[in-house]
Image 1 (cartoon, one colour):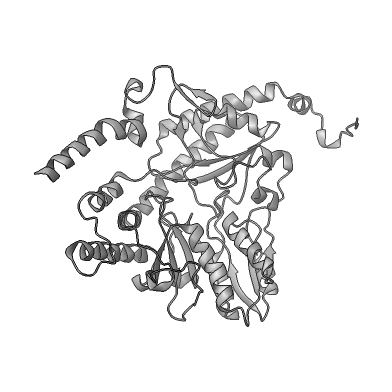
Image 2: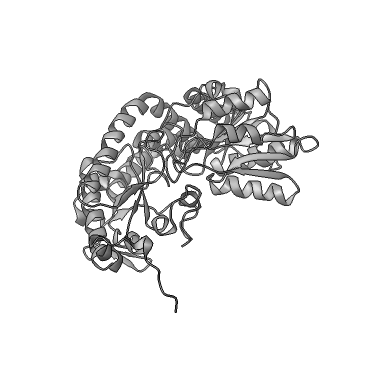
Length: 450
C-alpha cells in the first residue's frame, strides 16, 4: 500500500512539476506554469523563457519511454546486479543482460562483446590506452585524425608522453580523410587506427567501411568513436570490421553517465584495464554496473532500432527547412563539412562578416553551440574547422545546429527568424560588409599596421 501511495505521489509530482518545467512538453505548457513572469536569469544573461533546444550533438533529452523503463530500478527493483544470493540481485542482473542484448542488436554484435562504461570518453580511453599498453612490447604507433573528439586526441597525447608515436591524419575541406594517405602511414609497429564514425562538430560521416577493410588488410585493430553515429546511421560492426567501438547513452535519448564499449571476440582484441576493482564487466571495467542507467541505454537502443529510419527522414526535412530558410534571406552562409557524407541532424554553418561571440550571445533564445560542448569554454576557433582549412574569421562565426527526434517545424522556423535577424543586425554594424556590398574585394586590401 505504501509503495502504491509513493508511486502515485511521485507520478503526480512528476506530471505537474517536472514535465511542464524541464521536458520537451514545456513547449505546450503556458509560460506562467514553468517560468517566472519576469523571465529567467542565469550566468548574467536574462531571457524571457526557456530557449529552443537545437544542440542535440551536445546531449539529447531522455525519451519519456526510456524514463519509464528506468524508474522501477530506482524505486522498487533497486538490487545490486552483482548480488547473487537473492531476488533483488537476480532481477537487476537480468535487466542488465537484457540491456546488453539491446545495445548489441543495434550494432550487429554479440551481447558478450558489450562492456558497460560511464560513457564514450571512458570507452575511448580504455580502447586507445588499453590496447597500446597491452601490446606495448611490439606495437608503438597509433594513427588517428586531426578532427577527433578531444578525449581521443588527449589519450593519444598521453601515449606520446609515454614514448609511443602518433600520426595525426589531416582531412580535406570536406572533413574526410584520404584513404591512400592512411594506407601509406601504416607501419609494422602500428598497434591501432582510431577514426570517429560521425564527427561531433560538423556531422561528417567518415568512410568507416573502407577504413575497416584497410585495417583488415594490414591486420591492424580498428577503433571508432561512434557516439554520434549510434542510433542515427546504420552501424554494423561486421561490415565496418571494427575491433573496438565507443558508444554513449545520452546522445540517443538515453540517460547521462552511461556508455558502452564494443570489443570484438573473434579475432579477439585485448586491452589493459584502466581501473582496478572488483572485476565486473569481465575485469575490463570494475565498479558496480548502474542498473537504471544501463536499462535506460538499452531501451534507447531498442527505440532507435525501431524508429531510426523514420527519425532520419523527418530530421532531414527539418535540416533542409533550416538551411533553405536561412539561405533564402541572407547571403554569405557556408556549410562546414561535406553535404553528401553527413548525418542529417548536424548543420554547422559559418556566417561571413559577423563576429562569432556576438552572434552566439545574440541567439540566447536558441540553445545552439559554436562547437563541441567539451571545448566550448574556449574562445579559440574550432580546431576541427581549422583542420578543414576554414579561414579563422569564418571559423569564429560557426554555429552548430543540432536537430533531433523532438524538434518541431515551429522551432525550426523560429530559429531561422532569430538567426537571420541577428546576422542582419550584426552586419549593419560591420564596415567590412558595407565594403563588400559596394563591390570591394577586401582580400586585396593592404591594411596599414599601427
